[in-house]
Length: 500
Image (cartoon, rainbow, N blue to C red; front, side, top):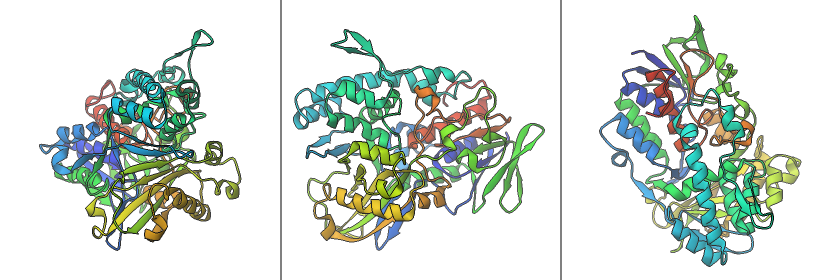
């Protein structure tokens, strides 16, 4: 077996490192910062603790598989997983409130019938059936296999099914997620519910392909989970699994270039000029952040496209509150923007910064109610997140944070009176920690390949890509899948066609 150099200690990179070590390779991870986990960070202050990256875990089976394949202790022995119920409370501009049960189609249908109105649950349930069809058509090529050489099949083929149109007496196929909401759901609140899943990844539903319907389907089908102590605990568990498999970590070691020799990847060059030899190199960061031939596409592979350009970022506001949460507080509340069109225009960066910073965004309010994240039972830690345009500066971020606080008052009664202090984390803060300020979206079929990510193989032999900026895209489950795909390609070779 050979030496493997992994660039970055994000979740996809560590998933690859652990699996490759079990396969017998000598693996070294080079991380430019002083810690692991990528976007899974924690902020601690005055006895409060906050997840500054993702706060919930969809599709935990990906990490269960990682732990099964890399050791004797299953995931549940290393972290405590808790299924959140309800999965979310949605607050709409007209005052409608709906609590959606976790992983229960029947429960969701009933909740929507009661809160939104007669027929709403039936329409949403029918939509979920079509979302499942899109999922079934794309699951294997987009999640469980390396990107096909003939990836253009995925670019042009829309997996979301056609829907009969009563008045036209024929079927029609939605091209975008917004069209799905407009044509099929029959209520602006249901359309907002649908679009919020795309907005969370910085996708504009007016341009996102209809196949983005798999995002709400995944949540409803497989549920949402919380890791006791915060999602940072999942990063810790994966890191410790790597150490147990004798993966070496080099923190404060920034890889700036992939070394090429005789047409193959031969190692990495660090910022201090040190050359580290390797038989295989895995780029676990955004591809364009490391110099080398992998930054351009080889014939037949997907060009980096949106992975290398500006994409929307995530604005996070950390709240330290006095007093315990109310009895009916829920883990996650989505407070929908009062002006959808203005929000989407602001997200694309079309208006000047001064105008877009006055638009109230859709805000996600996370209230874990976890004793590990607060000084005592007389306090509460809360995290607000919103998607913001690329290039949002500190001044604009502060203005938007004020609007987020105002929106969050609908989800947290008495928020202003309870507030001890708050911190604003901008996309620039994320960039300092991870090297990229944007929110990588999951790979999606259709849409002319705009949301296909660069493949796990490259134009250079023995050079691979893993993590959210490569196939199969962003999100914790997708990052973990990328690690499995890279492992299969290294262990089994270029003929590998399925996840390990």
